[in-house]
Length: 572
Image (cartoon, rainbow, N blue to C red; front, side, top):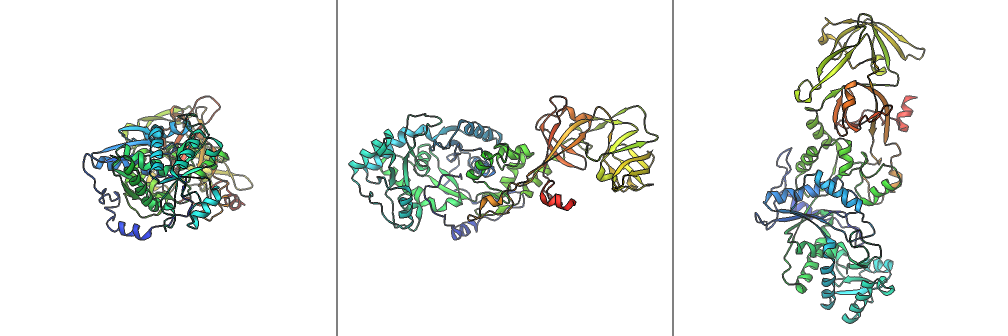
């Protein structure tokens, strides 16, 4: 299951009947574990070989993570082997950066693979195979202009070059390997069936020239196989028994088997490969097309492929998803062939279930509008009390709580309070509000109160987060994010540019408790009454705030996204 450059330029025909038929025996085993009881056809324990073949033209996204983990799951299920293979047949799109980061993603996903290979390892054999196919009369050189070729394929019209002689095809093949002018004007096409109802069978392109230096082989080759040509050959050469693909490529299966069969005729001993399809992972308000994700990166709408708004593995991990939660979610999906759009809330709910029992608790107060509170009978000198970082999880350790007679409350809390009311200061005790000072606009500017530590916290309406006024407080930048696009499901004929969300990040300043200065990058915490956050930038130098990213918890956002036009309008 991977995004490939379409060799057959047709709208993919859905195969609903096939998908429904194959899904009748694929009911959910239970709510948490997807069904895998369909199994793989012809699978023998100990002999199954699966492969995960990413193209190094971007970082892995959540859909690739599903492909990788399903391949691992089936390899483990049958005590078989998993291979990881870089499908590097298009030098125009591939970079070292992508290879390095895919390897990082593969490691983060915990894949245990038998070996790592590259399609480019097989370029010599693929060129040998190409020559054999020409001599067998099943591949021909075609210099029909691209648009005309596309039009002819749509109309099932044979190319004028289809019946070139073997000798002429071999001559052009040599020119293509040199990257000469004549070579560059040609593509090699497989002679399949131009009258086929399946567009992928109408003489697909098998080799084409590309003078861009290859990230691995440099300028050694000028001629490269297409994915459709290389994949069946390399799968068979590597002994892959089961090639997993997403069901959107259902109509390419016929082509895969045809190509492999013709190759087996000219290359004795090439084994068979089973294709097994499963549903692609789609999410609402999300694009997984590499072309569109590349556009977000190149137009600087995001910081890069690992931006927390990106649906890449690195993006969602940076946002606060744990690997365990990602794996649990994908396994819960099972191996269904039903194509659906998933809500993000389910995956974030699983994540919350995993982080909440263990992540340390800290306190922060928003800087804007914060309210000074004077406790008349509070400690005049700073007191430090040791409290647990997580009341129900001792391994989270302890933290220091600072107490004094001057504290900060948040404006949003202060606005709700009434004079004479008794409230609870979390982890300290109760206080009674004596006087609430407000300005002409009704904004609370200060509060006078008395500590009432013998008061019963069970009887108070408000349990408030607070911080002692102290030089020790740390500066924080809290960041929240919205979806990159504004439409739940993007259709093929949508004008994508009109769906781009222009307001996807909101940063605000807060003060944090002094214990936060020891937090490390990647630490996940809960800010009491604010939610879960991941440390993106820890404290490195004075004057630079700790940057924390808000982690979704699976609940729907209340109201519009902060800073968006809708949010600004609602404030007026």
